[in-house]
Image (cartoon, rainbow, N blue to C red; front, side):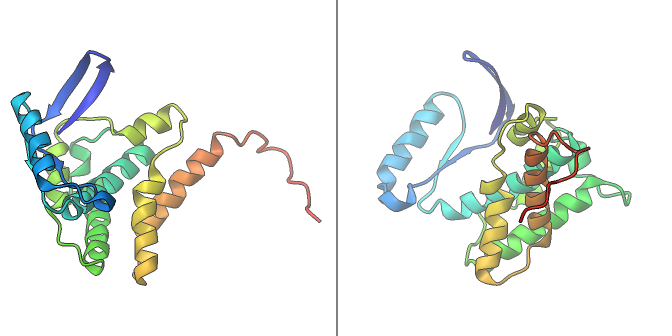
Length: 194
């Protein structure tokens, strides 16, 4: 499920998919509580799915969000058909596919079997023209969540001794954009530090 917040009483519902709910890992939340929460969401007219182990869903969403949000923040495009197109060399779908495959490789190395395929999630969401949160952050020069998305995949890959050059590059490029917002003296030489 995704949506766009317009006001405190108006959220535009954009994608009719289930909200995944699982136990909060450090606390060992009983599955009965998770199921009760899912039932409340369903009773409210939305879709929900209670999961005994949330990690496969978390990783599916992490790979999807890190790929889509990162490319959106760097290109200025909302999640749109550009993100699934793979016909021409310049199509962004190639990059999204490669980012997703790289994330899946890291998840597999961590012993995670994904709940859903992030590439399919991308293709479904690409018809919404939804502006991801990181695009909003970049447009408004706010701190992004890149540390928790591409940065998290890059750090996990490093911990596992696996390469993740694309997620590492996206992470560094977005951190560079954040740094640029406060960099005002581009025409002045940097003083030597001694």
